[in-house]
Amino acid sequence: MKVNIAVADQSHFKYAEKIVEMMEGSSKERGTVLAIRTPEYIKDKMENHKAIIALDEDGTIAGFSYIETWSHTKFVANSGLIVAPKYRRSGLARQIKRRIFELSREMYPYAKIFSITTQLAVMKINNELGFKPVSFSELTSEQEFWEGCYGCPNYDILQRNDCKICLCTALLYDPSDEKKQQKQQEI
Image (cartoon, rainbow, N blue to C red; front, side):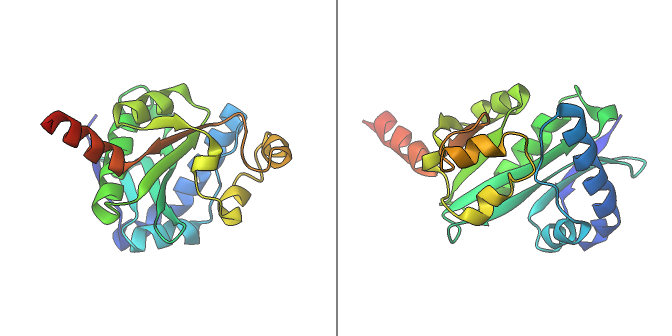
């Protein structure tokens, strides 16, 4: 099976509803909650080139992820990673995650990039990309971001702990860490 991974644009609007359906289905399967978005929200990400889409050669949607910025672009969240069941365990999630990370770095080279997940596979991929586990206090403090967790069964844990502790793992890529490592290697 040949899958094309690309930065989404307006030509991909026709996939927005299917992407939302995939997100809802995946959330139900896992008993966790992806921040479910509307087709309009997904189209906005596509129109602004802040999404990665994976399409099978026959035009079937295989996967998707998008970028969300916070704290005046100080933080970028790589969010909504979804792979259709038929394409799971093929390495496609890793390819999409790598491409959304690259796009984040291209668009926001100085931003800290973060991901919140309960999925071990996503944690491993993030680790390969240079993400480090951090406490939630190192992420954006914008309440609007944390409201995206509202539908999750663990939301009460997050709220009781003032958005500082949950069952999810927070992972952060800080571009300044890369610069520090380069300086150390030069010494």
